[in-house]
Image 1 (tube, rainbow, N blue to C red):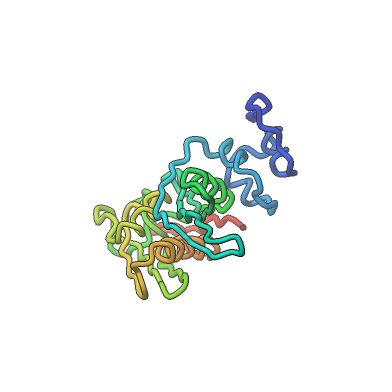
Image 2 (tube, rainbow, N blue to C red; image 1 turned 60 degrees about the vertical axis):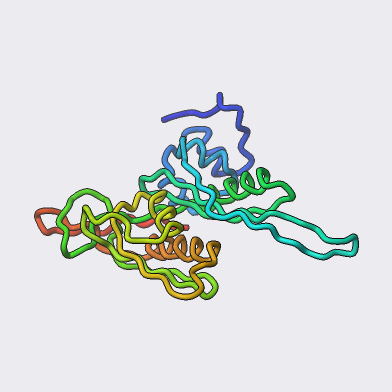
Length: 220
């Protein structure tokens, strides 16, 4: 097992100590432990090289007794493009700080997405799409993600495409309803759809033999 005592990170949670001591050495085991993710460094150790993408930056103004206060709200998604994705919003007086806050929170919201080949048109044995259709909501926006055969690509808007791509979903049809011009709700609805898929038990991808197994589902 790996040991991370030389990384300079001093864990303050039980899960963090278990990761540092090598008792838990995969993200899947960390999610299945039932212990909450409270340290972004833990995710950095188990999923090194996570990609992040800023989906939206918006200036938010609020009147206080001392006058008008301006903050920036940043919407960020992170993922390893291989089944793990996280999403969050961050606010701060400075854009850079808001982005870093959002990235840190997104790491704590990381989920494992059940990938496979859930389209009846496709008999690929490679995990390139979802195993089943899923839907997510945020505000007035609803996003539906439907498994697609290999070679289709992502039939999705830029925001939905970005979240699915970070999760390692290469082929999918998508439908969206509501005020889809609101990037924050569109991104959150997409993440919620993937989260709903991760919390549902479903058949694993169908291989050439036609057999199916239960997919592994990470407990949140």
